[in-house]
Image 1 (cartoon, one colour):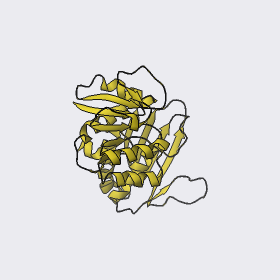
Image 2: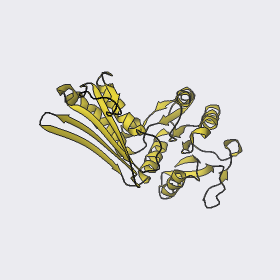
Image 3: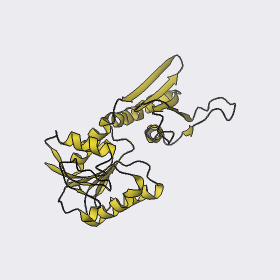
Image 4: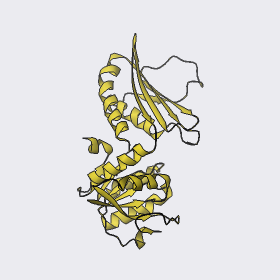
Length: 251
């Protein structure tokens, strides 16, 4: 059984992951790290990583961006593999993740959902056929009204996956209201919708002459991200140092 430390265990996602792990025979949360006081856990909770005395095989980080630096330094020093799920990391922190991966196994993806990562693979393959046949590409993402960033990291990851498949020949268009011009054939339109309690929806539209192909993913709860994090932790435990993504998990 894989033994995991949950960094950010008292946050919304930390609690979901801990709950799912209780019913998974292949992984156990053996310790949690969080500054918030919460006694309703089946594992010991420490306010800092340096206080943690529990042995583990992997770290699952679902905390906040400002806590990432300490977590990464601790993993680099101890050699603890880490699944980095925290979003909103700066470019400097993302570079730091790659540096830590030289010392230990680190997995980071823009979206931990297994379904989204299959979608990333599918749109990459579709682009090689459809974009090459002059299909226009548009991405529409929808999230709840409390999400402050736009477009979503997943929408950008989808665009990047397509662009990589097409030798980075495309640029991204986020707003069509600023100028009155026809659509550039080498652009990927990315639009954001914010409203209600939408957990997350992403549509990748390939629009050609007389036909449209749409790839869609809908998240109905945050549990899908927790499931992905657990699968990633089980995959990463025991791996050699290096930078991994969810693409490695799904194969």
